[in-house]
Image (cartoon, rainbow, N blue to C red):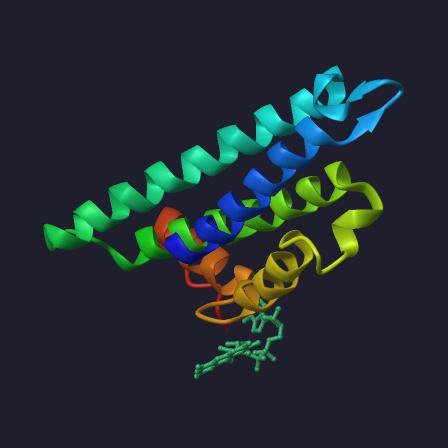
Amino acid sequence: VWGSMGAARSSFEAAVEYAKSREQFGRPIGGFQLTQAKLADMAVELHKGILLAHHLGRRMDAGRLRPEQVSFGKLNNVREAIEICRTARTILGANGISLEYPVMRHATNLESVLTYEGTVEMHQLVLGKALTGLDAFR
Ligand SMILES: Cc1cc2nc3c(=O)[nH]c(=O)nc-3n(C[C@H](O)[C@H](O)[C@H](O)COP(=O)(O)OP(=O)(O)OC[C@H]3O[C@@H](n4cnc5c(N)ncnc54)[C@H](O)[C@@H]3O)c2cc1C
């Protein structure tokens, strides 16, 4: 839950820096509204994910963390971190696929994280069972 947010933060920060320095049509691409919309949406999801991780950590410290809440956090944060990396990649243009920048490395690593420690589907099933009381695993 936390680790995915670290990867997302690194990619977000790389995108912000790139947007401020890369110039097209005579000005930084960060000055275009579409780029700012991407950065705004990335910031919203990044900070929602960090707040969620904080919240789950506090529940764990208090001994009140439930398994389905772990699923909630892992599912959301990894999925959104991948989306943040994907958006960051677009802001970096062709440089987004280069290992000179951290974005693609985080994106590929997060694809592994999507599978280990519970696949997306398993966490959806955990949440589905918690919501309905019905077990759809098998
Ligand atoms: C980089 C990496 C590191 C790993 N590290 C570890 C480790 O340290 N320790 C460890 O024990 N394991 C580790 N794993 C293994 C990982 O936990 C498993 O790959 C993961 O649990 C999925 O199992 P599987 O690959 O056999 O896929 P499968 O179980 O074959 O699943 C394939 C697909 O089918 C879906 N699926 C399966 N059953 C259902 C169902 N009932 N309903 C709906 N969809 C279903 C899955 O969600 C998945 O999308 C690691 C994996 C990776 C990629």
